[in-house]
Length: 298
Image (cartoon, rainbow, N blue to C red; front, side, top):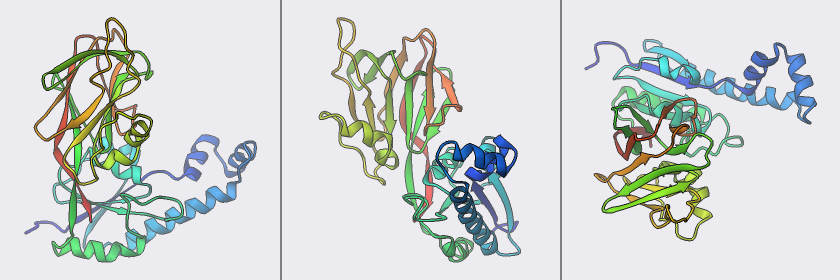
């Protein structure tokens, strides 16, 4: 039984209108900037209004006695989630991936402000569904599905988790040099880096790489526990090979990367390059299914 009323954490990101105001100071300057690039301010304002309506609908759906707070995407790394929180992500699918790495079992409800603007793979509910979803959470009846996450654990103890994929390689995405080990196989590579993707991430970057290769491993489905690793543009030479460039990583298995990059080695998740780990020469990283999983409202 909860000692305190439930807390709803509403997560969103600044709209394009807000970002333009921060950059240009006024709507008039924003209009001039957009028109110089063949765009219209009215379209930006319309999308901003769609987001505001969705946020208002979610705020109105929260019971008066419940606790509530609003967190912007750029504040997530400084926000302290409570164990009994319910997270409502209002915006694009990527927002769910942004918040997932900071959670430890708290359920996530994805709210899509507009199906015309967002695909809605992870933000699958319209704003009008928020009252029923929060009521189900309050009664302990909210159905969720577990989404596998991927973990990168370095030999010095640092760790990073992601919902879609983790990239390992050079920060420029070029001339990544490393040794790759998987099971009994081991190979030295010169490539454009590699990604390890989850089933959730199989519709994004991993799919793009997979479709360009005839030898790509089958990607896991959204609810599968397996991961897939895909090496990008491995180069064959007398010192480097191309035989270990893709595969499935099952629960309990690990892919190990030993850096041979003097500088620029990096690890980041879900496309957020600003939140990364450095991978200097001689440092290794193990990639595997994360202990954590994201609970997404089904």
